[in-house]
Image (cartoon, rainbow, N blue to C red; front, side, top):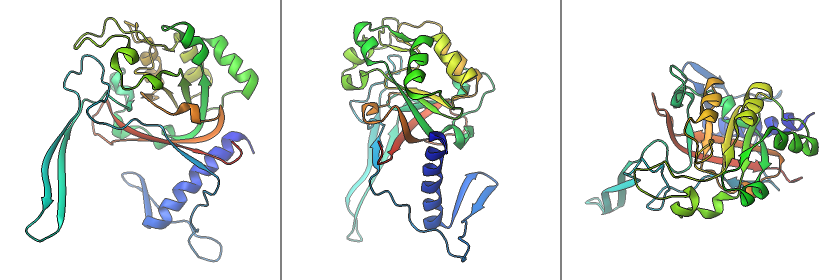
Length: 289
């Protein structure tokens, strides 16, 4: 069994556990899977996560959330109710407002591909799978505008093995440590102006290799974009969208994941017609890592 098989098995076990608790699990409208039964007719027991590390890969949304400079409204949480009711019990409720592409979020293919899948249409197989974490912290520390190269990917594979189809490739630059200081994180914090940004990310040819030749299910990074900050054509977004793959941006805690062996579950708000949306991503790291 390959590492990819092991990671997929862990994800499948987690999903099986959820189905056991909820009776059914719906993957997409019209596709409902009944709870699988063991040979003796009993539903599977709870998933044993003993020894696993559960790692939160998302920043919380709030007043300090970093947005793309042109999204000047930021995040708003409006109190609708808070306090004791006439019935004598406590109740609170809020209304929230946010741009799609701020904080830890997902880019759907339609963000850069006319007619591409929206957020609600991204297949689950692109959101759950084995993680490949490429460490680019040394290069990024030396060059704020560094872009991942084919040589960097090949060096990673020489040490950890070839990247398998269906992997969620996550780029670790170390930039998450700068959050939520927008000036440090983005390279410029001028409201409404995205022309002076500086931060590292993927390079064009590396992105082509990962999605076209390696069959990556998604590309993610611990920076504000899967294109480097000074990009004007967003070529990596174009490449990834053309492959109908999503992008995962503003991730965190990638330093807590191994290069291989973890399973990522990256579930966004399911927005019909959305080009992106808030993302809660986690990783399951097995005991061996």
